[in-house]
Amino acid sequence: MESLSKALVTTTAAVVRPPQPSVLPPVLWRDPHHVPPEELATHILRLEHACLEHPESADLRTCLGMAYAMNYEVYKSMDALEAATAIAPSHFWAQLKCGELYYRLRVLQRAEAQTLKALALAETPWQLSLARKQLQEIRRVGHDTARNVTWNKPLLPPTLVLCGMLLAAAMVMLWT
Image 1 (cartoon, rainbow, N blue to C red):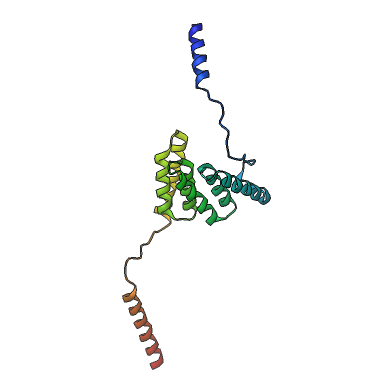
Image 2: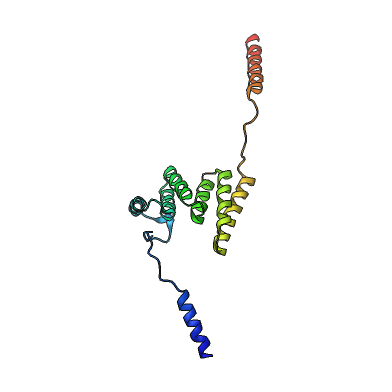
């Protein structure tokens, strides 16, 4: 029995790896909705510098995109998240957060496509549940509220009919 527990300890000790140094700066807040603007600006600045130091880090670009989104800088957020997905197409968080940004902007087809990519990349049950919930919400909004109209019919005939009706109504009013 004792040799079994020693073997278990040895095996467990061999599996445990020392923590890898992270290039991600620590985030000091728990509630992202009540972050002081000065603190957010400082964090964005640190992330921008970290991205310059590590240009191939999808993690940093994803964090920067999220920080920009919290600061309501949509285009910068979109650029950072698209750069993260271009750097590492197999990065789950970059795909998921890019899909979330598109969802919040109500670009539902792109949001669904990005979230489906994230769903395929999910490695843990938690990641899988996050991606599924996001995909479910995107599809619910797509079916319930937003209509993605495709403008594939010519508008010239209805416009000519409307102009003719307005002209006829004007003629009748002038005649009387």
